[in-house]
Image: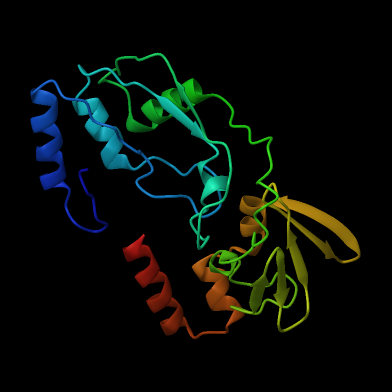
Length: 220
């Protein structure tokens, strides 16, 4: 295992990978470099794409993994019983002349569509435990850190909004008299706010707004 930590130069990791490939070894890369909070595929890290283009003479073997998020969401306190499938695609050699973004698109096209038709085993009843890490704000009262989870139910302690997590990890709730069913990723998009909007809602001064936005951009 070659570790890679955030905000630390990856020269050591790159040297270790170069040594392995020079000795005709095989390296497995997770191009997102982190587990997803919502189950949606994140953008590949630029340094990974640049590495693949730099080593363009080494074939890329795309491997598609489905079900790992349902089996163990990043926010969950434990694993669930769920089928994980692994599909191996055709290897290909990258074109060193293309941009990193173009290589990412090529790889994603080889993966094809992701489908998660099954449901988590009925033996798992504590579906929502830990999901407050993602659902950090109530969409109705806009209160932060107000949700409490128990089994498959999440309740806002401020306004009483109830969210039900189904066994296929969908979010079920009533809003403005209408029933809504969203994926965790779609719900996260619903509550996610930009630093600018956060500063505006909290009525910070221009000076404070600059500090908050600057810190977040630096850490991104």
